[in-house]
Length: 338
Ligand code: MRU
Image (cartoon, rainbow, N blue to C red; front, side, top):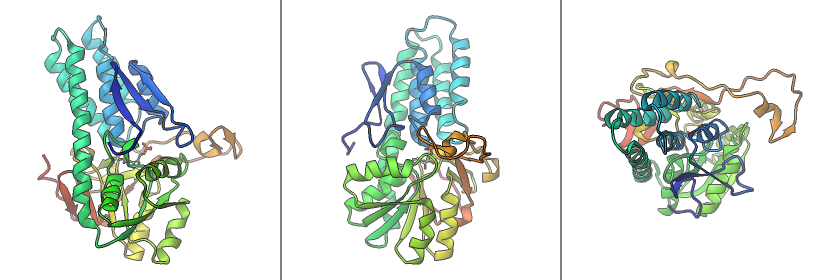
C-alpha cells in the first residue's frame, strides 16, 4: 500500500473498514465480525466500489461461520441471500460470493469451516491487490506523453482491495511522469469524486482540480483534457460497461471532442453470463440522496426523483479496456481471459 490509510483490512479476527461516508473530513473505522453489520455497510456505501464490495462480502461470508454451531447449510442460504441482496450492479459481489460458495461446498464437513472460508476470503483480497498492480502497469501504454486526465467517481484504494483500477493507472502514470494533472468529477449525488478521489489524490501527491460533473464538456472544448479513464462495475461480453452514473455522458463527450476514453477493471468485472449492457441490472437509489446533501434538506421531500446509480456505456464508445490481463481494444473479444 502506498498511502497511510487502510480501506479494508482484517485484524484481530475482525474486518476493519474505513467509513467512506465520513471521508474526507473524518477518518473513522468500522471494526466488526458481524456479517449483518458488513451487509449494512455495503448498503450504506460505507464501503463501496465494485472490487471492494466483492472483497468485503467474501470476508462477511467467512465471518458468518465464526463460532457458528448450527446447521451449516441453512446458515449458508441465509448469508448468501443477505449479501447478494445488498447491491445489484457490481458483478464482483456475485463473483466473490460464488467463489466463497464453492469453498463452502468443498469444505462443508471441515472441523474448522471458518478457517477454510477465511483463507479463501484472504486469497480473494490478495488476488485483488495483484490485479490492481497489473492494471497500473498495463495502463501505462495509454499515455502518449505527459497527460491531463479526467476521471469520474472513485476507483482507488477505497474502491478495491488494492491500489485501485483507473486510479492506479493514473497513479502509476504520475509516478512515471506521464500524468501532470487530474480533473476529478465531483460525481453527484454521493460525491465520490470530490470526497474520495480528492482524498486519495491528495494522499498520493497528485495535482488535481475538482470539477462539477457538468464542467467536463467545457474543459474538453478548451483542449484541456488529454484522456479520460474510469472504472466499471460490470462489463458485458460485448464490452458494454456499467459504471457510475455520468460515465456514459463522458464517453459521448469524448467521442465529440476526439479524446480517448478508457475503462480500467479487473477481469472479475467481466460478466461472462451477460451478452450485452441491456442485461445489466441498474441499481436505483433513494430520492433522499438527491433531495438532501448529508442531512440537509435542499429540495422538497415531496418531489419525485429518478436516481439510477449507474449507466451503461456502449462498447463502441470505449477506446480500450485496461485489465490485469492486458489492454483490450474495440471490438472486444475476452475469450483469452482466464
Ligand atoms: O456506487 P459506487 O460508489 O459503489 O460506484 C462505484 C463506481 O461506479 C466505480 O467507478 C466502480 O465500482 C469501479 S471501482 C474500481
